[in-house]
Image (cartoon, rainbow, N blue to C red; front, top):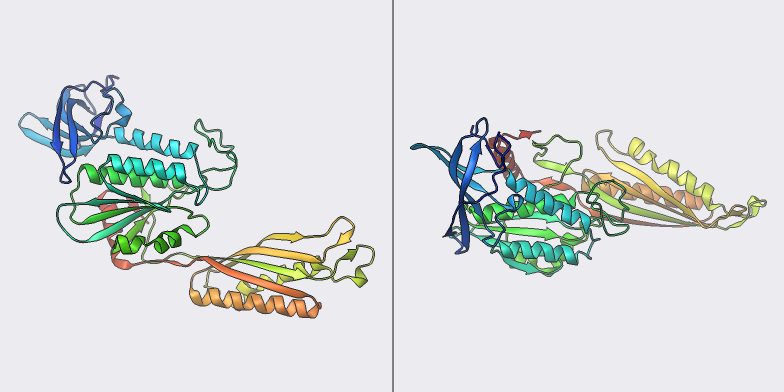
Length: 395
């Protein structure tokens, strides 16, 4: 397979563009085609090819900003048609780093939305901005439509990574990789806009507030699925530690649900030297923490794969004062609606029973933030087939 590089084997940077011509893509957008030299890996021979950028006003000297589609010919025989040169990787990396430098929390992604919307408009897409951003790319034929989705929000985390492009927003960081998700989806939009070899419509969906599970519902409530009907929607999430080029997916259950719980115990506080006249919320809370662990180990099928975790324990006590109030907070993961409902039922039974035994009141709040993610078989099979054709490792 022919390998094309923006830098020749002799160390010369291919940054001089020789001539410009123009063409119009199927959407009627005028695009620039620039003729310049390219080097084939393994030698210093120059071959003519066309490098294409959707930005006709792009500075020729900025190699990293170019989006190249190479058509390389040698003599009379075409060596390759439609080779994508790695220069694009640099521009997407720069875009990702800019998103990383200016992270925004859920439903506060105003700068991010403006950046995404401008990028899509510059590609010639129809753009709609609401609680999220939607870009529409239509081909000249076909009435089918699919959605490609990425998330935009960051986390309330202080960055201490030591990178040369750290967050410039105090206490906020793209620690979950949504900066990369946006860059990848914008790269896909640019790819498809430059060479729309498909029939139908692609709806690019940039969702706010994924971290708290509210952004998708907000876009649905706003009418995104009614305004832009799609048959299928595809999304991707990075996996730190996985090797580059590896795709992990399957049909059926792919992600467990996430539910949050908060248990408030109201007893009777008092001086630490007189516990007999108090109803110590701490000891009652500790008893509940221990009992909650029996749900997975003794109440559910061993193969259920559920998780119940107490992650916070708060009281109103002091060094010499027994607390009258204790609050337990935590997280539940389940692979089915049945297990999720059973966990909630057992949790309420445990809390009510322990509270009754100690003559205190208890309140349990249980809310499901994310339901189970279940991949439909046909779209998943299509993803696997495409990934394998591209030479990616699918597990």
